[in-house]
Image (cartoon, rainbow, N blue to C red; front, side, top):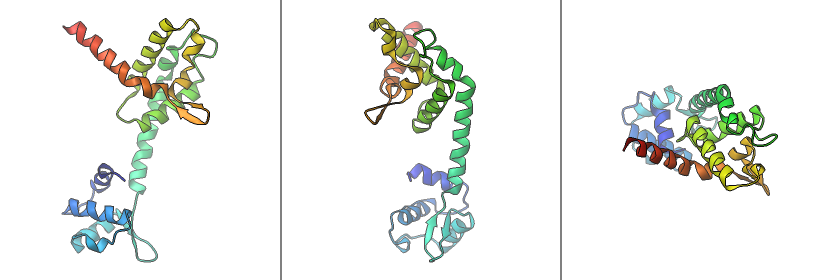
Length: 187
């Protein structure tokens, strides 16, 4: 668990010393004796009351991830719903390139959702920008539009058992190109 995830887990807790609580959670997760952490009994009781820490049947403290998991599930559902409601914008970028180039709506939705969950620094509009950049640039380079690939394979594709992503490899370049084009319009 990252520090930001631990802080999020502690955000609703009424503990007084959050730094000590972070250390305590780190100790519990890494099988370090929690007694090594200087934290008040009151804060430990508050963490237990807030259900951040639970005591297992052997009396050992464990970190309760359920609240963090619920929040992530809600966020994932929001991402899925947004992508699902806007998937036609994405698929239309591939329209007319070759038979089957648009991919299926469900494959594109599932793959974009998974990609956005694992690459949270980007949003759906960034994906659209990268897709447009890929199709526009590759269409000019290639005589055979089949080599551009299907919309769903652009996001993720297994090659020799290894999952690859053209989207991941091109997105920064596409966003830089978009920003430099925008900057040249302003200047």
